[in-house]
Every structure is written in structure tokens, then in C-alpha cells.
Length: 184
Image (cartoon, rainbow, N blue to C red):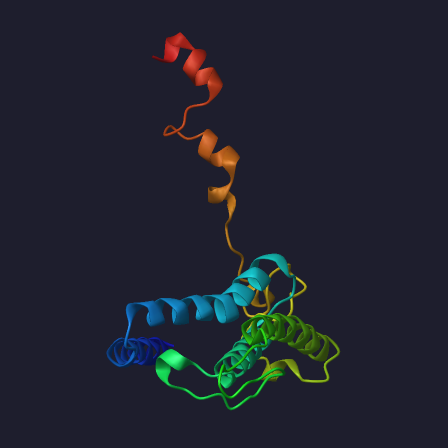
């Protein structure tokens, strides 16, 4: 896992440096990053928070689809010519179709549909659980995600995070302690 983190940091660092060197204007970088946030990060973030049973498989494929459709429409600041000519394409004016919104919507749909398909395939054992490499598709019978240790009898103590425990500590005194003058 550590090698993946190191490689990811190197790829992001090299990509950022190349973008900074080859994009002519700051405005071009600003627009490009806004597009990336809109097409790639917004669907991922929204699905992770609001859509139940979204998993890594759907998220990864949604990312790939969003990036291909977005950069398929071309990017003038990077001098990438379009290899997907959407409806209303004009040789002089470029893409007139709202392909960035299409890319975002396709990413949303891909995340949701593929996540539910993989959840179904693993639940019905069409794909055996031994091939589930992410550990986040199904909930196990002990109430946690598959792969979190509970299926092997490992329990996690969550009592230290409850509000009643925090209220009864000396750091945060209870109402009775505040009003009881004999304890002061």
C-alpha cells in the first residue's frame, strides 16, 4: 500500500509540474481545474456521501468514463484536439454541445450503476468473495464492512467516542458538577 501512495504522489507531482509548464495562462489552469472538479470530483464526492452502497468498482469506472468523455471533447489550454465530436460540433468554433455536463452525468450514472451491479454480483455469489479485493462491497453479518475484521471475531471499542462518555469525563463536567458548589 505504501508503494501505491508513493507512486500516486509522484504521478500527481509530475502531472502538476507539466501542467504548470505547458499551460500558457493562469486562467487556462483555473478553468481546467474547475472542469476536473466538476466532472470528476463532484460526482465522486456526492455519491460517497449521499448514495448508499457505492463502492470502489463504480467509483473507479466513473472516474475513467468522466475523464475520457471530458478530454474526448478536447482541451484548448493543453492543445488537445477533440477525438469525440459531440453533436453540434463546428470546425471553427469547436464543441457547442455541453459535453462537460454530459461527462459529469455519465460519471454519476456509471458510479451508481456499476456499484449496484458489483454489489449484486458479490451478494449472489456470481463472483466469489475471494475476488473482492477492495473490502467495501458488502456488509458482513456482524454489522461492519467485509474485511474490517469483525468476521474474524475482532471487535472495535466505540464507547470512547460516545457523547455520554465525553460528558462524564473531567474535561467536560456535567450540569450537576457545575451547580454543585461542594465539589469546587
